[in-house]
Image (cartoon, rainbow, N blue to C red; front, side, top):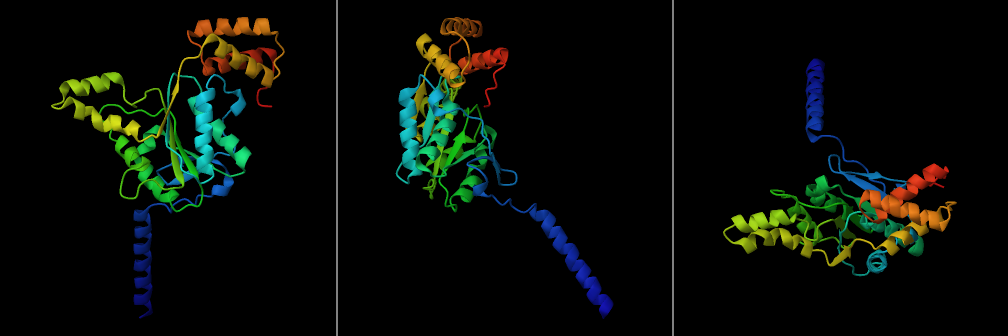
Length: 288
């Protein structure tokens, strides 16, 4: 009798081990108190805390004053529990779209004391948004979901998950979640793709309607355009003053303009790259 019980216990133990292997690893325990910024990892449904996110101060972002104020007001209203819109920041490369989102997030925390959370979702993980929404809707935290450089190519169906997450589906978007995305494309699709679908479809307007309607789910469209020379030099002056770079304004401007000419563009990114080069030559640590 003892041998039979021992054998039964052994079999039960083996079955339990097999079920555990089939179930996969236990879901990660996400601790919101560890940081204000996180990155979503859909494979194990984990929010990775980022204690020291890569961002610049809001005051250093120049040449986009109007969109800065609109984004800041929208984000502050959301943090305080009032109605706010999903936001699509679109337009010229290197003009501070993603930097502005991160800087506004930090400034709202500083100004209100509300620990608003920022969760970055990688472009390739958009299809996992329903699982992330399930996790977030039971949280007491107010969360900004952020996707940088969002766009969709031919035969890409991940946009359907994003449409449902923004405001579709029977449940809709949780009240404690807002979605911010940056893109070089206003409609999130390349022009040639829209033209190809229009030319090959039986009903050209319907062929593009479903994908173009995705951008309509964003209540705010904030456009970023190429900066003027004055705006570019204002960015340079702002960085130089902030980091106390010891260079005469005339030489600073001459070098910055030459740097932009060699790059073939003027933008916030080009200005920052010049400042990094200058700080390296002057042996100034920008991390202080």
